[in-house]
Amino acid sequence: MNFEFSDELIQLREQARRFLADRCPPSVPRRILDTDEPYAADLWRAIAEMGWTGAAIPEEYGGVGLGRLAVCVLAEEIGRAVAPVPFSSSVYLATEAIMLFGSEQQKQTWLPKLASGEIIGTFALAERPGASDPAKLTSSVAAGRLAGTKLAVPDGDIADIAVVAVNGGDSPWLHLVDLKGAGVTRETVATFDPTRSHARIAFSGAQAEPLPGSKGADTVRTLLDYAAVPMAFEQVGGVQAALDMANAYAKERYAFGRPIGSFQGIKHKLADMYIQVELARSNAYYGAWAVHTSAAELPIAASVARIAACEAGWFVTKENIQTHGGMGFTWQMDCHLYYRRAKLLRLALGGAREWKHRLVNELRVRNTTDLAAA
Image (cartoon, rainbow, N blue to C red; front, side, top):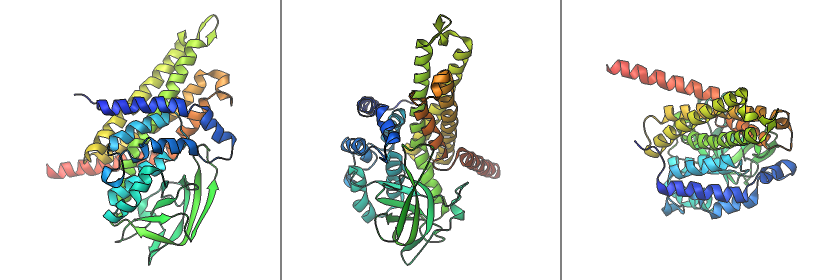
């Protein structure tokens, strides 16, 4: 059985890799670290012009219509380049929420703008440190007005609209909010990786438009499942780049008259890194299949993809620094770019621990159902 992407998507991946190698060398994320720019606006415009922001959006709504697998392919290359752009917030989350739960009118209104890159979207969930349980949300909407505060909203300082999770009870749990409208206060917050900006957003009577299909806390989890898969691909792209960096350095760095890659300790380190990368990649492919087919296994597939990618991100980027030795910790080396991003993405969409709990719960429910059916 062939689990590889189609020839069309492979060509898209190669095109994306060449484009990002040319337009997003390490100097681009370093520019964001060294300046007050929240993201690479020039790169974002070029990405939108390439049609990437509308990859999964059907053509009838102004998109390219390549489907969710195309987003996974692009996400991996964005992760490989550590691109400082709001791709995950706008594409994996805001766009996906509207496609899954929006009305026909909302799709006609917002999807063309998101596809063209005219606007940037994001998703606001967390209200306190720790696990983000949708059932415990306190933000609420009354008479079309939203009240509540969201912490560390990814790209919340630059986004134009936000899909906000609230405790809706019997009403929709996801609402669209114009972040440039009245009743919205934004404050940029510092994170481990400044190349991806975050903001604290307070809503005090902001006008909120419900996504009618988002009934119940499970819809929030469904959105996170769909977003977790391309996020896993983005993490895989980052760890593959970190592995490639470590492997290249091990071949060119000499100690005691021979490349350090010839020493057993470095060989074992690189082998362990490779195993982590391939485990993450195989689980991401499983998730891609589940997303593409809207399979019943999606909650499990998304969880294992997310967990494997988080574990690989932590291990591989850390070992890349170790492979470089004392130089790996210095600012002039690029190792820290991948380590920062891996640490940040490990906490996105809820931390790895939350996804482990979700996986355990899903397996428990399915095993109980199977036993009852037997």
